[in-house]
Structures are given as C-alpha cells and as structure tokens.
Image 1 (cartoon, rainbow, N blue to C red):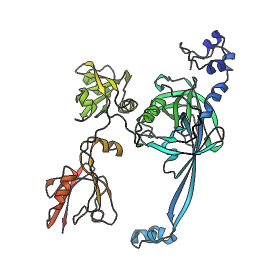
Image 2: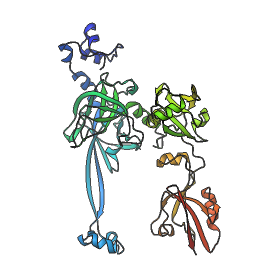
Image 3: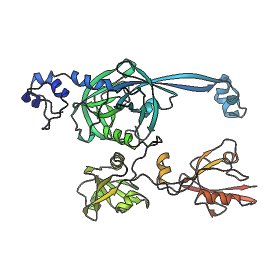
Image 4: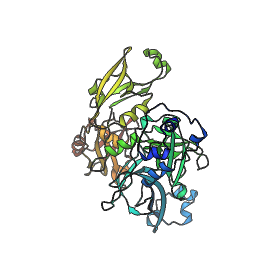
Length: 476
C-alpha cells in the first residue's frame, strides 16, 4: 500500500492536497491506522488521471464469398474439395465489424498507447477523448510480442492531458492501484484494487510477458486502459483477464510501464520497433541443476548457446554460465531474463551478474539490436526451375526476430509462395529452408540463384522443415 496513510495525518494534509501538490513522500509503507484514513477518497486522483484515458473504436471490413449450402456439406467437400472453384467464383460480400477498447495518452502531441489486440486488423481507428472530442488515429507501430500498439492523433497543436509513466520496478505486491477504461462500452469507469502479483509469465498472453496481476475489476473494453498508482502515474496497460464467464473474477493482467516505455522509445522513424538482443539461449535452472553447479537455490538461466554476433558473446558470456541478474534485478527464469533485456534501450550498457565455476562475476553488456548478417537479400525466384514462385531471403538474427523464429537459424529461408506456381505445386512451404541443390550447398540467396541457373535433367532440392532434412527429386 502506498505511504499516504499515517504520514498525511502527521503532516496535516488531505489526500487531495497531497496529490495536487504532486508529491511523493518517502517512508515505510503501512496499512490504514484509523477509520478516518479508510474514508479517504480517490476522487482527486481520478480527476487528475481520467482525462488522459481515451476510448478507442475500430471498424474492420470483412470480405467473404457467398456460397450455396451444398458446397459447405462435409460429404461434398470430402470428395470434391474446392476443385471447381465455387468459392473463387462466388460473389464477394463485405460486412463491417466494430470493436472497442481503451487507450492512454502519454505525450501532449497526441501519442497514445493501447493493446495490439484492440486495433489489430482495423481499417479505421477512432479515438474519443474524455471531453467527447473525436479524432481519427494513425497507427504508428505495433508489437505482438508485448501486445502493445502506438497511435497518434493530430490536434492542431492543442495540448492534451497526459499520464506520466512510473517505474514499474517500484511496485510491490499489496500496493493500491486504480484501473480506468471503457468496459463493455458503457463509458469510462474506474475500479480499485491491489497488486496481487508481479512478473507473471507463462499465461499465454504474449511472448515477452511479465505481467502485473491485479484484482481491480477489468472487463472487455478495459483492454488498453490505464493501471494507475497512487502517485497518479501509469504503472501498467490493462491487457487481459482470467475468466470462465467473460467478466471480471479478480484476476487481471497489465503490461508494466517499463515495458511500455521501452516500446515507445524503441520505435524507429520507419515505425518498426527495435529492441535489444542478448544473443544467448538457455534453460531455467531447476533444483538438480542448482545442486550440480553449487548454487544455493534454483534461480537464473543456464546458457547453452551463444551467438557469435550477439551482445552476450561480446560481453564475454560463455556456454555453461548462469545469468542470475540484470542491473541488480533477478532473472529467475528465461521469461524474466528476456523481459529485463527488452525493457532496456539500445545503445545503453547493462550489468549482468553471472555464476561461473562456483563464483559470481559481473559482466558489462552493451545493448545492441539483432544484427542483419548476412543482408536479407529478398528475391522472387523465376525461370524454369522447381522453386519458381518462391520468395526467399537470407536468415539472420534480425529477420528471425521480426518473424519470431529461432535467432540461431541460418541459411536461405522461403518467406512466401505464389499460389499455382511450380514451387506451390511441388509442395514447398513458407518456413522451409533450402539447404542444397543437386548436392551443392545453398548457403545464401545469391548462391541458390546461381545453382538454379544450371541446366540439368533432374533436380534434387534438399529442404529442411521442422528440423528434418529431406530431398525432393524433380525430373525436367
């Protein structure tokens, strides 16, 4: 619980006076000591923060094709599939889908943060402010790994109310928080609760999830709204709930403000998010591993692979090291380690605390984005050869990061295949790696193109799919 209890009484301040002064008193946290303290109101805090929480309405045009009911019959599909092109020849029908959510203004020039799932696939995004003004919003960037999106509205230079971002690492379990959003489209609503847990991961919400858990009531429509601390700053973006009924059951999750700050900071001018890349992979230390390494408890990440071009290698991290902490914050498991690295800015330095041969050691890590080595060299393959119709690229840590693939993969990667082309008919798939042509390694796109130029009577293409290599033999 925040320190607004006994301290305010001693100082002779009301909660409203304290909040309006914008002060944060440094003292030990304590529970309410009297009925008077329990009766203090959140109203001044809501007046300060609610104007910066917006409603977001999206419109999406969904295109489908009308079909005769016969064509949907499973028996008919089993024998005929779509070989007659009934779906292709049917008239196209357009219908509009509407959705709603919430967002938070974080800059006076109109920068708004919301959830990616609130605006995903939308053809039109409309923002309604607390004072009922409406604006069309431009999508600046999205980040599926954190389920965040950044929007921008133009107000002709008129300043907007904003909420400053807090340091979410200062949160503690038991702290009071407010959730502000637009649940079920009924209009802006405020609920209160406490921080139930920190660093929640493995809940299936995003790949870089390390969420704040709260029991403040969060419902559909609250997504993208604000989780506010008692100092009036943003501690998180409300993202999801755990529910068997669709309504709040006291388990809500919010993206921590430090991750929000990192996403805002990491968006380049081109609208693409750039975040630091450790360049190492490992496994969470369990009790057996801890015992074998001489650790007093199971914590940290045992490194089993280090990329030659990564920041970890440049910092001196070795296979067999255990990363225990980043900048003094414990990395209990792989999710926590990834979260800590992702919240830091590219170009800064971090300190890793590692366990090596029975001792702790500090390493300086220069934070860098995943490198594009080799250059991706995207090409659409043509000519009279089996891979005509495939779009290929050189795999690199940068490409793997964009596609959420293993950054240790390398080689020539099939990005897409044009329907009806030889590559499509022969069964090549997006995600395949082309390893060789007629026994000759195809290490790069340039080498693959050269190999495919050779006139031969029979092709043997070696493809890797799901970690398994297979040869496809094609006669001319």
